[in-house]
Image (tube, rainbow, N blue to C red; front, top):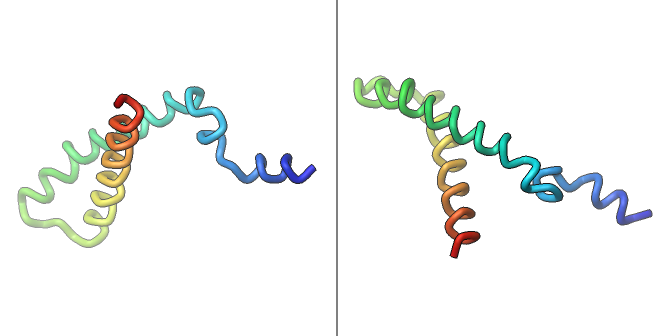
Length: 75
C-alpha cells in the first residue's frame, strides 16, 4: 500500500523514461529555437532585460542537464 503512494509521487519521466523521450526532445528543440531566434538577437543588440535573462538561464540549464545525462549514459 505504501509503495503505491510512493509511485504516485514519482514523475512519469522517471518511471518510464523512453516513453517520455519524445516530450524531452520537443522541449530541447523549442528551447533551442527560442535561444537562436529570440534571445540571441536581443543579447546581440544589448537589450537583454531580467525577464529574458531568466528564460535564457532556464533554457541553458535544460540543455546542460540533457547533454550531461546523455554523456553519462553513452560512456
